[in-house]
Image (cartoon, rainbow, N blue to C red; front, side, top):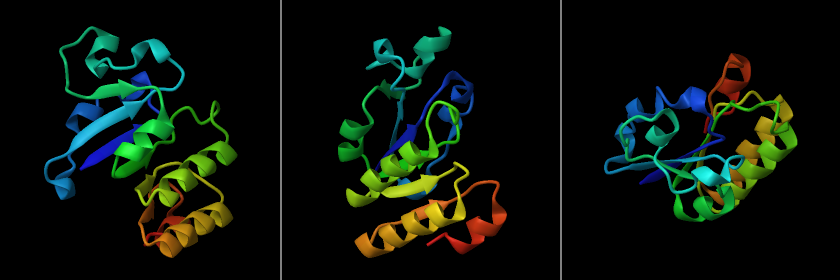
Length: 140
């Protein structure tokens, strides 16, 4: 199974190699950095001049969505990516029948829309963030 993390930035480098994806069995992890195209195809270790981690950087969310099984939508770069764009990104993934794990705080009505869309398309949407009230209501 392939999971992608988006949006990616350097603050995630220390934790990404240690992410355990136990439910996925044989798994592969990629990260998407749409702002630094020169990193496309490089390993995340390259950024900090560290050894390869076998985690590749891509610059194209749409292309990677077609190839992945799971989108992990982070709350990084919150200022650079509006809620509207984040929601459209997650809608694209859901429409492609990808499992979406949302770690970004979103308004409750938008979380409900994403959850309902996932249920209609028969895929999964998991809302896991600091907003505990919505988290309990919208995990399906």
